Length: 148
Image (cartoon, rainbow, N blue to C red; front, side, top):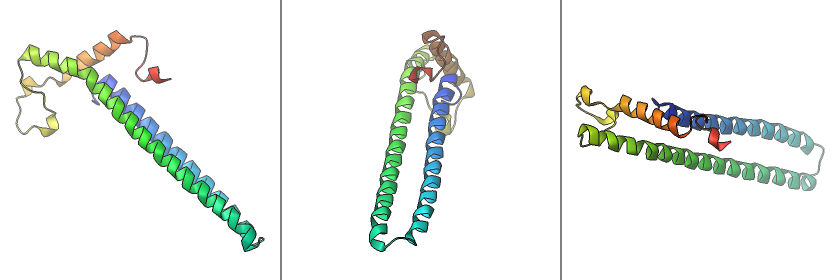
């Protein structure tokens, strides 16, 4: 996947989205820390009865924000899985065509091969055809630009 232009674009999009969510989380953490310090400073000047609703509201805000961040992470994971499924749906016809052309019985990821005959490796041909297919389908649209 990471060797084709399309695969690199999918992986880069996933990485960008993860980095943005991580940065957002760090930003929220800093904001909560500042808000908590301000709340702690106020505590010294307030009665416990006046302070409790402020502390409870802050806790509720933090919990709700954490839940929202968790939901965003789950959504990000689902979207990444969908992009990967779309990638493999796009590459499957190419693999099937090469299987027919070469008379091969299977396509195996090299990470799981114990012994292989290197002259039967079709990875580069698959990458070439995938990149060519993507270029033919959307020559003026860079990978990932359709989502904007």
